[in-house]
Length: 73
Image (cartoon, rainbow, N blue to C red; front, side, top):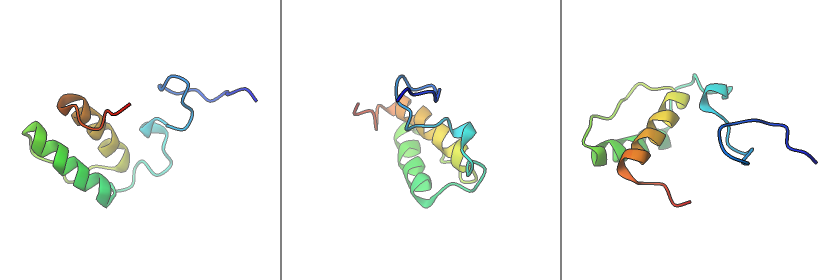
């Protein structure tokens, strides 16, 4: 079966762009909030408290890039 879904992740159709999430505008989850706090502390910046799920996901990716954390693949 041919994969017709397009996203920004090379060949991986299991990860969807946060801007396309149906729940992306909801308040971030407790897990996201906790991980953002950890990453923010490591990056030496204040953790943002009022992000949506999609915004939190993008911020997590940004902070992972800056800290080198969470990039095990």
